[in-house]
Image (cartoon, rainbow, N blue to C red; front, side, top):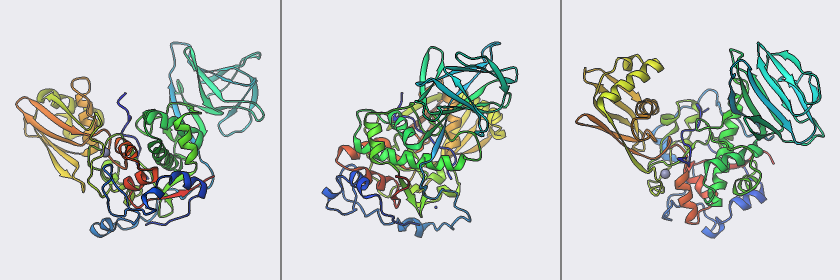
Length: 472
Ligand SMILES: [Zn+2]
């Protein structure tokens, strides 16, 4: 896969700085190596060159672009209890006339079945088979009588005193998913979503194992653990009463490979347990991407203009040192015929309801019409042969162009592109992989290989954020 790995994570994000003491023992681990730097907080990029003290909130941001404090800060305050993360693992579709089916087993004998409110409930012999068909659930326990229940959301869990985890079977193999899963019918009641519910610290190793290469440095894994924990904490808080899951297993939030109990991913998670990135005593939605291409993006440009994203740690690092030029996606190029690009953009426009694009013809010109504070494009202007033109904001433009080029040309890895028309083709010279906000995974690894620790990495990529302990 194109790793690190999976890049444009994160849904719409969800605000002055304080320092709260981090638990001493864990801070010891996280700070390992910092002492060797002389105990100061002066940081360095991947080359080791000295940079300004970024532990101080970046005044330049506040001075050059004052941002009025939002009336309500949508970010969660630091949780003191470990959150549960609800992970959308699979959308189970109906097969022929046999409905949408899944089997669930536990390592122990018994399995509890409840409606999702936790009311009622029955303990059944496992494995059990749950099939959504003809507007209701058909439940087949092992050694028991099959029965039907109404087609609402149901939960399957390991009863108290029994051993887990649960595993689900689709096809021939069983996948362990933790001690509780929800089965939530889709609106048409023909299929259902399989949602695993896991404590944050149990969830995180599966993120790290998928997001980073196994031969990368422990410091990168620790930095990634703190960023992923902070991001998932914000997602869980945001989605709690809005939908039945918090994250998916793909790049639209952050990748997840399933339960991982050992190895560097599990170790790094344990060593940073409960540690979160914070700003003004609230958690930072710590976006990250595979490769920034040498320049950071601001969350307000690349993610959304949600007030949660209008904070200094998400406004991009202050240094211009490029640490990720060793990534295979640092520079890339996509070429597509003007005719085809116009036709595909029109198709995307019809699909997405962008009227200006729906009738688009062959592309005549394409240019960056605005750049962000750090020099990355934030808007593109595309004109067709008939003189119609449209302005696309960076991320929306990337989605449109990714759709337009998919299957016809090389992959469009980011919105960091410099487009030009040459004859009957459009050439998109691109840099980096992902949105470029926050931590750059390849840059972090370059820093780690030069002896930088996790805290140095995080302070560089989330300027002004502090490390604080939520739960223990
Ligand atoms: Zn980078």
